Amino acid sequence: MNAPRSWASRRSRPGEGGYVLLFVTVALTVVALVAARFALRIDGLREQAQTLQAYADARLVANSARAQALYWLSTRPIGHASAGFVDEQPLALDGRRLRTEEGAIVRVQDERGLLSLNTLDRDGLGNVLISLGARADQLSSLMDVLEDYADSDSLRRLNGAEAQDYSALGLPPPRNDWLLSVDELGRMPIWQSEPALRSKLLPWVGVRRDKLFNPNTAPLELLKSIWPKVSLEQWGLFETLRKNSPFVDAASATAATGIPFVGDQLLFHGSNVLRLQVWASGLPQALEYNLLILPTGAAAPWLIREIRQTDRLDPAHATSAVASPVAKFPVPSSTVAGPRSPAQPTP
Image (cartoon, rainbow, N blue to C red; front, side, top):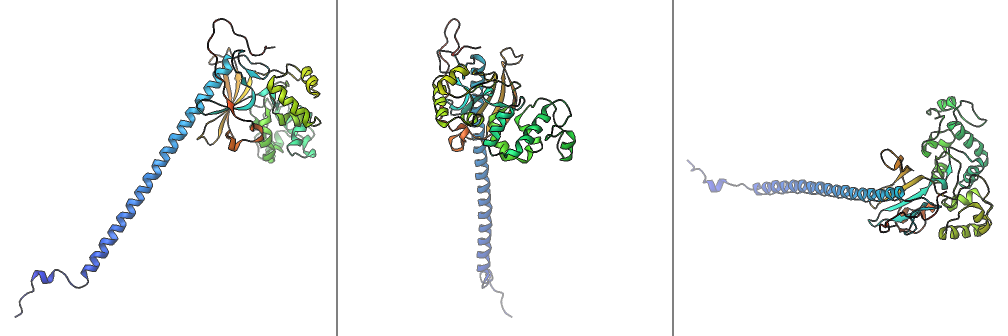
């Protein structure tokens, strides 16, 4: 009778060591993959947290810049092309880019320097649309539709559109009242099918309810479009002179440059209807605030009528409309006793 084998002789068989090594290798590989997965997830969460923190910091800088601009605009008199007292650098209202001490970029545009969609200047807007690429045979339709949208009746102009035309296109009916936003152009027949034209036009138009126009604060390219027969040399002279010292009236501007500034609608003075744009590094877009400065307002000396998103204001994304160098946002002068004089007289 054979004696049983010892434990030492039974503890392993040929090939069992290879299976154990394979199992251990697979287990270690799975652990490594899971650990790498967790590491990637943690890195992603860390990057997301950093992105959110950067966005929050950028919003804080932008909100601070907005507060600075609102404070300045509500405590300074508005002159021919700027807001400020005589003993401090004024805040320009011509849409130039300004950088605050915290690094935000601010633009303030007097809406009197833009064309109003609510009080249509057909000749001026027609010249502008042609300069932006519209066809001559489109002009009548574009402007008739715009006027039908804003008027209070249901009578259709020759090339216009009323409620039944909007319904046929699946569009909401016309407002038949003042436009509240320039974005309403995208709700109108003809205009809706021209997104590129609308995109170019929007920086040059507003929704003020009067026809007054201030060449001191108007974008130079807009002026060239409104008066297409004026030479580039004259516009260059006008730009140089108005930046050194804004014109006080049409007569002085015409005498200095030869540009025929004629019409009762011209008023070389800023208004209390303003467009404020603010951007800080870390924000995907700038925020645009359409303001009405109201010194006697019930809640604040300003009213924010609309907030829109617009293109970034940093030099890498600046369009021709904002291609000027970035200047410093003005710093308030020291407080002085007694009344203070505006930088320019208020009419």
